[in-house]
Image (cartoon, rainbow, N blue to C red; front, side, top):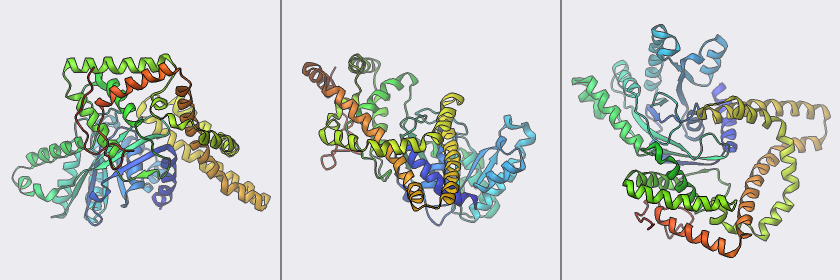
Length: 446
């Protein structure tokens, strides 16, 4: 019951927390089969929230066993479809024995053709690369087979990628890969169980690599991020819809990462020199690449929008300043690990906003005025508008700063940026506002 109450609230919270949620190939998740969703794990618990809210099936997922310490917490977490998985550090071998109950639960749910999400890497580290996949997914799949016979389990690899995992209003790029069919491994499992587990785990890892951005070298992360910024600023996506059914941005960013992975040392040095020269120039003049790439945002029309939108923006900002302060403060000052920042902020925001609106509702009940009800109903829309207004103002400011540069500075920056386009994916002619799914292979000369 609690799961079904919380899911729509979490869906609203996610839609406000992220500017765009790209979700591709949801059709790979079957509607009438037992399913294991095997995902990477770059944040504390945003991935299960996203999959619970933005795919069609009810979801059960495993979380750290050390959270299940008191009867109240156990009941609460179970009500949210969470089941514990204990690690050795959560209580030694004694606690590990409790995992048998979790496995039995998973076997039963798969037999009932339910969907279970497993964070297949086994630990939370935010990196733009896939870490080694643990064998737990394969063991649960084959365990359900031993327990209940010939189940047609589908194991769906899910890649969850973030532009900036720790930032409010970043982008999420989710892609499902083709499902792995457990029945394809039955003969091997009957003869050599360990080999079948290893083979299934290896196949899952390979398929997850296809849907996860992979920067092989940690020292290349700054270079790749600069290219990501350039590519994202080559096109503008409006605020709505929040959820989009394509993988264009993800395909482009995987393409960029793969290009950098394949560079020789000499090429890597040349790319870094050229990119750093451009970004150093931007820093020198106090500019951002988005302003150079999208100068059209500084226009009379947008200036008028900002002028006339200032009052509703102010209403939305003041009306939500109180419940926004605590989550922002906690995530910024109390949470050190990047993997937990947005997770904690989302959870805290849901709690504070629910309490805030409950108090407003009680106040309006006491006032008994139609104007009070109108204010209460429209306040959330003003709040969302205030977020969009701030983003519009930021774009407008960056474009204005670029347009106010001397002509020779602007022209030099545009020439530099044009040179860097050779490092990026080509664009489809029929949809020039998005990068093509299959990027070109041109490289800029330096």
